[in-house]
Image (cartoon, rainbow, N blue to C red; front, side):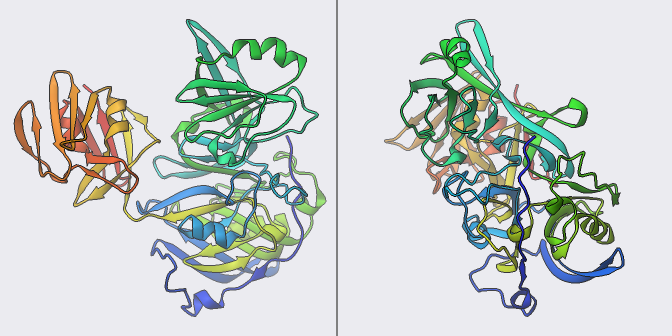
Amino acid sequence: MFRHKMKSGAALLLTAALFAGGTPASALYSPSVNAVTKQVTAQGKTFSVSTVTVDLTDPTLELAPALADGGIGHDAPLQAIAEREGAVAAINGTFFNAYESDPYSRYPNGTLLQAGEAMHSGENQTFILNRDKVPGIQFVDLDIAVRVSEGSGTYTINPWGVNKYYGEGSTDQIVWYTPDFGRWIGFPNGTKVVIEGGLITRITNDSVQVPAGGYVLFVGNSANNRQYVLPNLDVGDRVTKELMAKGEGGSSLNALSWLAAIGAGPKLVTSGSVDLNVNRDGFSDPKVTQSSAARSFIGIDGSDRLVMGTVPSATLSQLAAIAVQLGLKEAMNMDGGSSSGLYANGSMLTYPGRELSNALVVRKLDKPKVQIDINGQPVYDYSGFIVKETTVVPIRPFITAMNAGFQWDAATRTATITNAGVTMKLKDGSSTATVNGKSVAVPVPLQIMEDSRMYVPLRLVAESLNSKVDWNSRLYRASVRLP
């Protein structure tokens, strides 16, 4: 298990602008995000602690790991990452190769996941937010398995990692790249397998870019891979991936149920008590385990709210005691030293001493975000939102999930949906639809939005096609049960 040494250096604490009410007029703000700086006494010493508390059940907020502009391996100022992401809160994320001379190879070392999609594999103590908006912290070993199918046969590949590169000397490496990698994959001594629409579309030794919505499998040029892996890969083969998440002791975890996850460590608090075991969590560098340095942490309070925090100088043992004094029932350490940084409602509370590879951000959404389940399975590639108390969703991926037929008449701007003997017609901008030739009132007309997707009322379409919709008002989740 590879761990990166914590960076040294002091973090600058700047809070005057926020607490004097000096938030820029253009800055995003959420009443569900509250920032304070307080004096906390722990282990006989008083510390100045900046915290940001976030109610993650607010449907206008979205928690996610965020990368520097350019993708995996790049770095950028924390404030720039937060502002680009439309964030109302942010803290520096997991460890990364900050001292790498190549400015495009400053890779993170910990788990990063958003909406059931691995952004980076890792083996760490991990903060998780599940689809029920319940946060937790536990050990996670996150990887993927890749299934390649041709005819009736299936071949399984277990990549070394996601969005990593193990160097030219590691000729046996196999790596899964996603669009989060953000750059051309030109690594030598390997074959690039391009996957689009679930199919292998290209196999080449040339440099390639990860296609939007697709992937690239990098297969190192070892004798083992040439003999046993590459012969099983052909253009036209179908490819599926499976998230493989294991907990302590190898227990299986359902990472598809996670909205967000970020791994760092070591863990500080479990069930309201100090739980610091650096050996268990894979840390041995005295700069991490013993030295006093700028620290960042995230935790969970008694109301299941996210708490992000920074301390100008503390040891890990002191940080764990601080987290207990703050009333956190769970907490873990984040990257620290010169990486320690904190942002809330348009103001920097703690300025990092360096640019960062990644951060944990809380985005402010224009509209409440609606989760969609179909037959109990989460659908992550799209989401809905509320218009005049009506849930609207993109029509094409929704219809695909329902296995319904779909046609679009560009001349009349009419969508026709067919399923199980039902034909439904929706016209762009019209307040009525037809179901098997009968006129039906439409609470929110079909409309084409800024993302070029066509949006329709979820309940009207689902129930017209003999499906049922259950609404969870606390989670803003629409659960569709197909006939």
